[in-house]
Structure formats: C-alpha cells, structure tokens
Length: 200
Image (cartoon, rainbow, N blue to C red; front, side, top):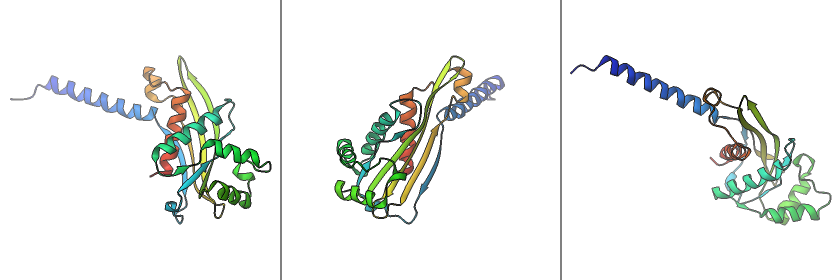
C-alpha cells in the first residue's frame, strides 16, 4: 500500500513544528555561565564547607539572603559536603568585628582562623549581581545573575568559581506568551546551574 502523500506531508509538518517548539523552549530556559575549576585541586579532601551570606549588589532588596538560603538548601540536597549551619556562620562573623563576609577583604590568616574555628576545608563566597524584572509587552520574566567561589582554607586560593546569568524572555515566550518566570524560579534555576558546575 502506497502511503497517502497528503498524510505524509501533514505528519512531516507536525514533526517539524514539534522540533522547532522544542528548540525554542530550550532557548527560554537557557542560562549563560562561566566556570573555572582548579585542575590540580583534590575536591575529595573537602568534607565540610561554610557558606558565607551572599552579598547583594542588585537593587532588589533581600536578594542576597534569599539566594543564600536557596544555595544552602540546593547544595545540602546534593549530599556531597557537610555544611556548617547558617547560624554558626553568622555567629562567627558577628563575634569577629574585623572579619568581613567579602572574600576580597579577607586575609589568608582570617580564612585559616575561620576554617579552624568552624572546622571546614572549604569556604564559599557569593554575590547577587542582578535580580530584576524584564517586561516584553504583556510578558514579564525575571533575570538573575549570581557569582560564587570556593576557597581552599589551607592556602586561601580559589579552587572553583562560577558566574551564572539567567536570560530574559526566550523566543517561545515572545512568540506565544508562555514560559513566564518568577523571581523564585529564576533564582532557583541560576543556583542549580551554579551548583551543577561544582558538583559534576
């Protein structure tokens, strides 16, 4: 039996449309990232990690605390490192008036002191560079930019660093008005992508 030409054309057209939709949908969820991992460092030597509260450089108040909680929860769920409770980290920082939560302002001696007190082999610092709503007609989405890095407490050197930016409305969103992303979804997507570059 010869296939119906009309039916074959319809099937081919549907297949093409589905493929195009899949590609467009992938574009909506895209996140750009840049990552560096020290090829000489043995990450197996890190058992316990402290996550320092992320600095908020965006105009969205509360983003630093919000992203810090997301990052802690997502990293804890990976069950790769033991994590210092956030309360312990905050108490340590509060009890050391000369201590900053910004890695660029911390000396190697301060990092080593924190490592000894909290019994950690790695310290993670981070910042939220952007957290804003982007509108395109009636469609709105949220753009988030997060940077993070892990420091080896023995040397104070960076052994992992990554920067992730969630994109604005994708092609499918602009065409069909779907795929809108809230701040929470955008932040979680960025955090998961960020952690994915560390936990491979």
